Length: 336
View 1: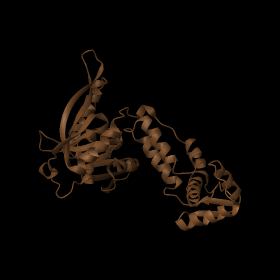
View 2: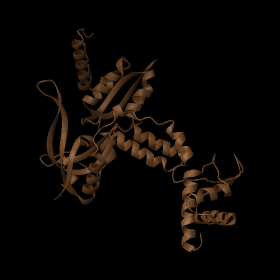
View 3: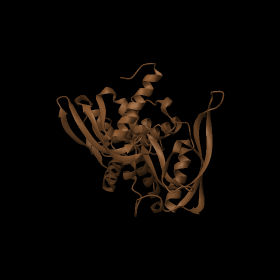
View 4: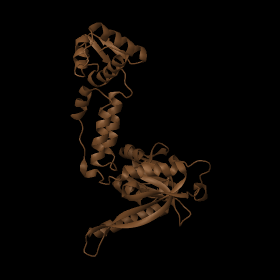
């Protein structure tokens, strides 16, 4: 393999070999490296392999020499460690808006960041729950188009679908075409949303990306978000997320819940740590927090069952009681 060009190619192949074939449990000695290089038509001398390893170390690769489980070299640190890759894979698999096909593609790319031995270990732990995945393959083009629109300050047009029942009781998609000014995208409660302004109204709205089709970038400038909300200078996505309850808008107000002690973890999971908690009586506490009052909040409170009772505001307490009465009536029982 004479010549400078050949040596450069050999170094590139060695980098790939260290990245994909070695890890702490699978070091490779000089003979292993020579054998791996031979598969690319490269037959280096043993001494040159040692020089190449030192060159790659000088370049910055964390190549470690070990004697366990055998004498050899392995790549010690990577851009992402195995635990971080597993975390990202779990995020991809749990995200309902990512289709099964794209989930598999993304997982394979993430596995490419670790050794083949680690990838095989991850394979044994990976399971895709396809029933929870969306089927809209356009969503990736949608995300790309929206990104361009936000960066360039342009409006977009899109087709938005919602499921409805027709006269025969069959589930159909009702489609509407919107023209909106896009401001930000938000991953909230396992959904991906576009926060935007509909050109006919003077407020914000959020639309699910997985329900969008045929998203197109327009040449018309977007309307400034300062005209349709109280944000100034920059669009505060974190604040907007804090105003949502199950991604259904509502009026933010202070609420007070009487909770059994065993409900502490569930209610803190739901409302976060920005709450006030104080003892009410043995076995029960009062929780106070500011949250958007909406149908989503009512449903969340009902999910807690008898372990959580609304103390205030009166309007929210009444909505929960009315929903309970409607449920009781639906089941032919009288609510007490």
